[in-house]
Image 1: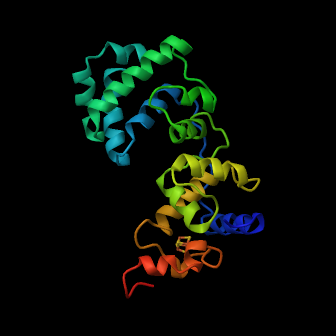
Image 2: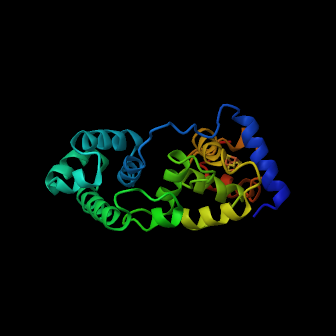
Length: 223
Ligand code: SF4
């Protein structure tokens, strides 16, 4: 893993490469319940499919009580675009029941409370905290997980492990913008397939690149 000085240098370079990537502005009135539901629907789903499923569901119900009143088949049909709709329907109902029983229907504000909700893991909790409550936490999704482990910013076999590792060592000043910076970097430069290692601003620091692992993983002829 990179040392503290190298880690800060890597973050500084990524920040300088994407001056437009800033911590999100939390919209007033963003509903935490709908954020949790959308996050649950997003598992193994493309953003556009999650958006379609969320929109269809929220036209039917927007509260835990409202969702519990719907038949499973109606929910499953609404959220069909995001896949795994039967499992997600069951999880949604469990989460709504628990939320009403344990929290009076109000979404808890902290990570432990969010993760106590059935079907809500570390990533979902961090995304809700970051984008809905505006907390300075770095949500680790598949892009952030990949980037962190390639460069050596954090280590983890799972997104949750990488999130814990990153949280313990992220440089001051990068908790708020960290998610957006690493996400943008992962989508535009350090892509899953065909990363732009040759022109990457952190290739001198990147452990995967320096070890030759990226060249070995790449088809002949690509730089
Ligand atoms: S050098 Fe390649 S693998 Fe390393 S961070 Fe840059 S794009 Fe990703």
